[in-house]
Image (cartoon, rainbow over all chains, first blue to last red; front, side):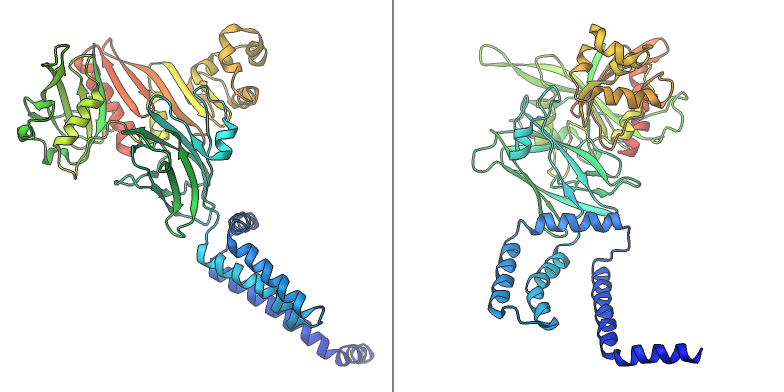
Length: 235
Length: 256
């Protein structure tokens, strides 16, 4: 038994610096992950985290932060060259990761998503209208379908509506717990228990009619002020 | 038969008076106001608005004639203070109820408005539809398209629904729905289909576009029509009208 201990001692004592470095790195990584989890309060399933990160990547890639940080990280890496060392790698990585973490923290949660579905009078999907986010009216009404995903980490939500002149929001036949605000300028409610996706239907009535150039209906998240969807109402 | 259009308002009783006529430029005039307590029918169990007051009366609406002048036509209104339901019986087909609602809203304080189209929770509306004595039309808009659920129920009663879908001309309409066979297969698996309550509809992701349903009371009928938030009730008799309104208040308005 004594020889086993002495053998362990020989192996570990001679490499204690390397072991300490690995341990420190591990603890550092765990601390960063723990800090991130605390910041975003993620205590849910892997699916939920996956949901959130996918939403984040989707939005982040649309921002100028994405290409700016990619550009600067590449520039730094090229300037420094292939200088070895953990601190150099971290410096290069942080040029890209730090702004991303900051953006994530500022704009969290990303799992509140709002899609747009366009149909003709017979219920057939209008793929071109969906892709271009445009809506045509039928008998003076724009009937818009918004499949909304809240994610399980969102209890209450508020989606602000910016309605162009010439139309008014008429109503919102919806599920229990979700509705229009009294001023009809937001969709508010609680995510349904046991289900995180649902469709809301916004019926918009033409009054004087929209004009080209000022016909955008904008849905944005009240918390993060992120633009969730912009639909162009065709005159 | 008398057709009433349904709207909704909150706290209208504070503002509703003959003084609404102070602005002569509007085309609607409140001719009379009576108030009375509403008594629930014993057939409507758990009615949530017991003791509510109704304001009812007549209004007149100026209808333009061909010579550039106008003539008045009388209609009736009813406002139910607790549920907030506002019923408008338009004086003639020449008058669009929406015009009357708009004219009344012009006269009201900016803090109150009668909504001429109702935001109704789908689950509540579904409950109300499912207690109808007959459903003539029920158009649903799901992920796969718009289809008539009454037709779907007829199809599911066939021995071989998939074959009937392909061969019987009465189900042609359903055939135009994307992935209808998937819908039929999943509905078929649920249980014995007797009515819409047996359809396993995902109301989170299915919209109710339109329905027409009939309710019976003491041998009389009332027909409810819904299209994109607009609701109409067409009743043979005031009692059956009141009965259906109370059902609607209990099943839909109380949770809306």
